[in-house]
Length: 184
Image (cartoon, rainbow, N blue to C red):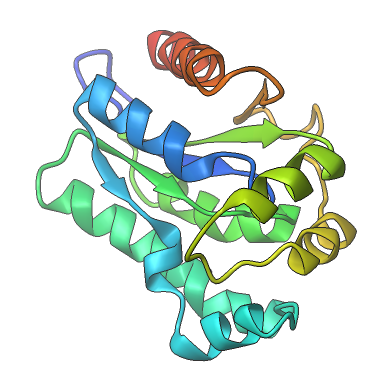
């Protein structure tokens, strides 16, 4: 990559249900004037129906959805966006690897993940308080069962503790994103 070339970012805001992906992603997108993509909007109806009925998604349920999100993010960049912020649980490393492909296909694209970390108990209380969302509290446990938290070998992931207030979490996430952007 040449020094004159500006890096365009795909930010994936990750974590289990109730961690604040949409809230944090919308805030970052607004503050940085980036496109926002709500990952849940791209689930096929069959996935939404399964989750609404308390049936955990399988890997096979997720592959096409992950590829769709990756492709949607790349399309936004191809249309001239300087970057985009995408919500996606990306519970397993191999799911994150599907998204990472976008950064390997273009020299000026960096894919970065913001992992919103919280306890299962905290997320259960948040999901129980939500209205009109297909993800119910019984699905939180299944997400924690499937969760492979990013570790130090995933150098493109920053961790944000979400036990603070929404504004504290948003500010911390934005700060970490800006630090990454400065180093890219």
